[in-house]
Image (cartoon, rainbow, N blue to C red; front, side, top):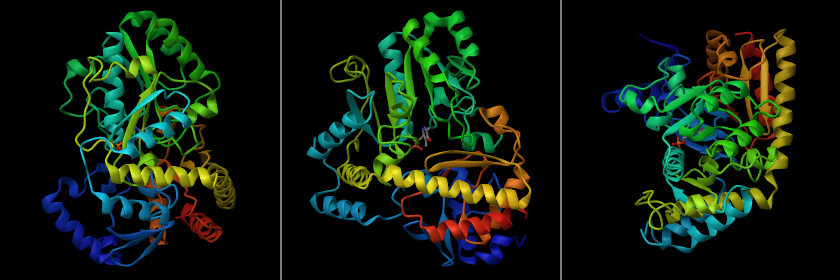
Length: 432
Ligand SMILES: *Cc1c(COP(=O)(O)O)cnc(C)c1O
């Protein structure tokens, strides 16, 4: 079948056909396959600033930003230079290098909950390690998570997760033993009574409550006033650990993440995405007494051949320092507000009353008139209307995430011109 993609992006279409022969679904991570919107993905040739260029040399204003890491835009000179310089000194050592210490010190300075921290290679590794550590520290097995919160593809956490799993209508993955999934209790977000009841029932068995303090993997919505405080209190009272998964929000919504903004300090924090400047990095850390349970000092095993990799440390440090040097969070808020204005006036022009949620440079336009504050309300969105909007935007040079259940990201490289173009395209796409 000759679909739109084949006509408009022939080189990408050809490459995708080839990819399907060798890679399951043609992609190395499911959301990239465009199943949430139909059609086929395009292949990126290069990316610079807020723009990506596909194999057919079509140019797009990018609001995915490699799913968050590209907070300074693509290929920022400071990061690229730091990686080049580090590469000249060696690609991996497998023995301590000074940049790991520098990174750890910076993280402990910036993120309120961090007294000690360990580097890993992905957000998934970070949350997986937090869960193991919480279980090892408390001697308990049960975990509370929230529906729609995604914490990477960790067995224990792939239960009612958002994002790819949702889009594919398979909230639970095959291959996760039921015996393991049973240890994970899933509750609705923003429902303190449900959490209280769970602690009443099985408080003595709960090792940890893990959440995205600003959930951004089923679209984007915020915790209601008091929700995070209630979780903190319940965990403290019942001897469970509170884990913030700030893989997405860390260094994006503020220098110290959501925990800096909300003033609630978790026991453990998982980090990723922005921390690596585009290289594969994650980190987890928290209270010293908990972190000291890790091998080699303690009984909880955790390791990584490439953890603290010198290229990744160089990229991450360069990106984080540049964010601080330019106080990027202020600029990101200004850009976010401008984007919101543009989107809201486009909605008005189109006579639509869709819900738009935003925190700083993260946003989600839900194709529903309902307030969105949890997974259930996010799912009231009209996905067909979203898919039409997505494809119209893409064909006119604006790339949003290919799923209603993903957040959008603005970088410091987005210009007023990019915003103006986007607003124009969005206006038309809403009527598509
Ligand atoms: C992306 C993400 C993860 C997983 O990180 P990977 O690097 O993809 O393994 C975990 N938690 C949250 C909140 C994320 O957004």
